[in-house]
Length: 402
Image 1 (spheres, rainbow, N blue to C red):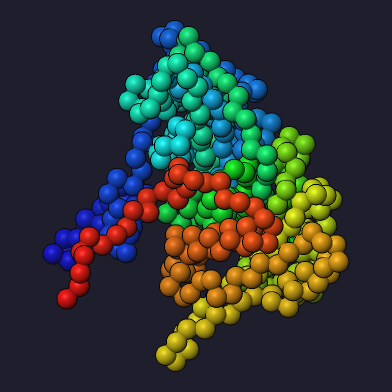
Image 2 (image 1 turned 180 degrees about the vertical axis):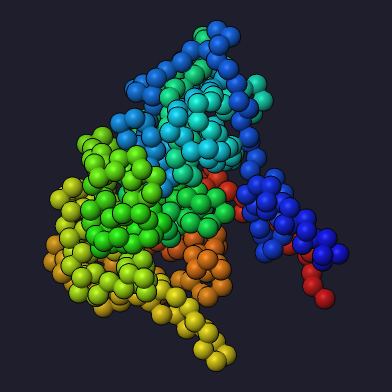
């Protein structure tokens, strides 16, 4: 039986991306695959990617290509049909998440030079006499070429929330190895968990705080890359080379709250950035953020580091402890920099085999940071019903134990 299960699991892993729950394959991990369609029958009304009704979330370049972690769009529409067309710079088979209104997240793979219908007669809750909200977030990268509705329908503007959050980080903030990547990250769960905020996650796996090459080809550190529309990846380098597109900060409302979680890659043996250099880089980044968002509160997260076995227990070893505390002390009289300590939030079993937080680990970080934000900054929680983290329905149906 074990051998049969092993071969079944091996086949599934080769066939498609697989989500494992304590070693068991999750059934229907990506509900909501959107059908590929043609717009040539004359029953559609199309809008270009520059339509004012389309609100872009996160960072997109001037060619409407998404970058960094969990970028997306939000728009309103009338009628009961909605389709998105994707341009040639869309990653092949990329997974995106979408939902109508406050319904649960659904997932669909899309590819370049194709159109997919995300709302139709099968979508629950659609009423032809009212406006509906559509939200899409992408795990990696797409190029939006058009949005289409039924010929007698239209797009409408969805009012933006009054507060804006930006998270600046690396693979932890971008959810690498989490179930739904960015949509399972602590950064997403924190910002979406606050509920009534706009959010952007400027995070990329492997990036250092310090401006030097880390893992990616010709990658730059966050003190440099934060000023650009594209991230620090190989794809960005292939697209832009040495001339990436500057990010237009005025294209989005200024952030009210910025959370920074950087330094783990600086500390890796391959990079091993000295503490003094790390400290100087952190001060530079905080100054850059403050110059850009002069009214924002800036939260510096401590690094939880790693967990090692020691005799009959496990020990947590945080990174750059004194350096991060010195950064906070440097700005302590300015009133806009705060320290969020992560020590003790995670335990060794909250870290997956790839040395990243599990889904539960991400949720623990997000929950603690949400409470900190409420108590320290006075922000109330606005997510009062619609799903945030997808697929958390785990329970034991046995009412007693023997």
